[in-house]
Image 1 (cartoon, rainbow, N blue to C red):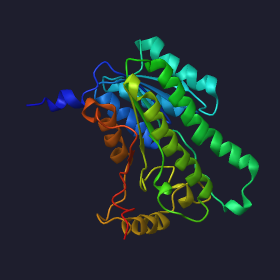
Image 2 (tube, helix red, strand yellow):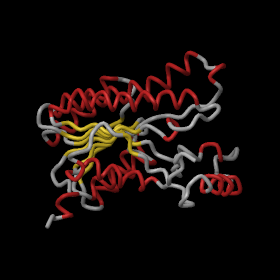
Image 3 (cartoon, helix red, strand yellow):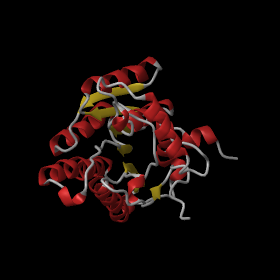
Length: 266
């Protein structure tokens, strides 16, 4: 018999989560902390990250927050160094932070290209590089976040999809390169998940959510899933817990899709 709690447990392990102030990143940080991990949250939203860390501490967990712009390599390295300096190592690296962008590829501005690639691609690479250096030969788990946009060609989402496709190739190549060090590298390709990230189009002039448009959006997304569901951040966080824990020891270089079946070929 296997001890399931021990298998999924992360007691005394050290995790870094970028984008930890909100959405999927916040849920990931809270779930990992609940499983026993010591968590360092990195985000450009320093106040939001600090509030999440304080909430984890209030529940008896261990967490720190560091203001981090992942497009800047020194800031990513400092984020990881905070974890290793405070708790002596790094076991789990979750590269969640990313930004959306909209518009047709034919009209894509070079400055926008550089901005989005700088965060979504370079930021993920910097996180992986810092994690590999910190993990060394002791092993660990790196979890990147791509997107369901890699599976469907949707007008006006081309640049975003391009960067997330790059994350999947980055993930698979790194998995081959660092497997001998005991480091596993996997990626999520989340389906529609109700967070600030996905609801940005539904806001009114005063910043509040237009409930009628939200209801219509949810209904349209539910129709894409055989389950009739729209995801929540926790659905992605549970998958991260699996990939961070020992139960996924035989899993690397894979793209994991918690998306309600929305991309099943018809």
